[in-house]
Image (cartoon, rainbow over all chains, first blue to last red; front, side, top):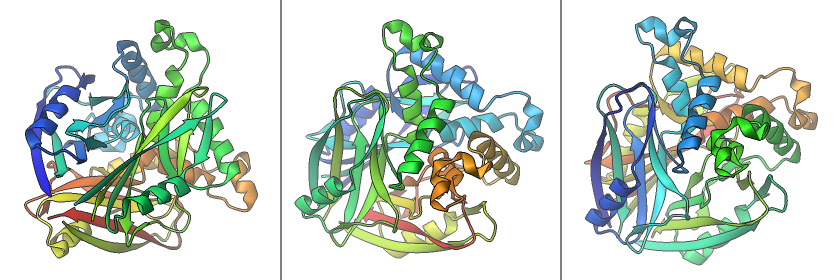
Length: 139
Length: 139
Length: 139
């Protein structure tokens, strides 16, 4: 069995944003030399997500409004978590809806994807550098 | 290390529906000959889900109403994604709540499940053939 | 390839609650002797979750109010699932938001975690013993 590990670094200037990281993950699969196995891609921070959906800017706009409706940033005081001095309780909730991680099959040295599948980093509390972990096992 | 891959094809005639795919996945585990490892089961389409919950029709009815409340199909015009000519923005959101994939342990050649765990395909934009990927690695 | 399996048992006295299980999972990684691989940690019950977020009691209070708003326990009669004699339809929905499982990388014999990542069991229909599965594969 082979194993491979790589960090990806993200810096989203605003509070929230979505970045397509598919090509970085494909690079990692190539570097790993693994032909068949499983790739785990996860946010290493608890106010961010890694998820798979469509690379369409209108949809990302819809995500933004939808998540803000499900878990509004304001009023900040309504969240007990924010009494600790934080202002990011909503980000912890949004990340639960969008998920921490994806697991993707590796087949014949490539991400085994449907036609429209793309991997995104979702940031809900930006403004500082954060990490994504890519771990691949297989042979 | 062994690895095994299989597609499952789905065709849901209406817009939305749930199908129990547990026995197809169990068949795949048997075909794989893998005794201990991990099985990934994921929708290859971004308006569908694979998830684990109860095989009870009342609950599936509750899922339908609940998801429609969280991410309504209408009015279609409220979603920017639908300005691209699509009418399925809500399906992309519903799929985030229900998830893209499950990872299940394989132990002694079987899905290592709790008593009530069953695997479902959830369709949120049906009417055409779609694929599920089963990838199993182990020994 | 090595593989390792372990059950963790939970008993939450009330209907809902969150328990940090990170040290139990770290123990399992140590027992497994696996240095590099993937660890799957999943609820074996369909009214409970395993998820990764912050070990902060204010946030857990926020989860409780947020989930109760997204999928209220009452009125029980509004859920078709509860016509089967159950009263836990809301628990099946809450578990979808919080997720069934997490997959965590194992690197150099340890959980490969970001600074704040902690693993939690989330109970939404407590009062009886339930199981979590830890399955680790690697070498």
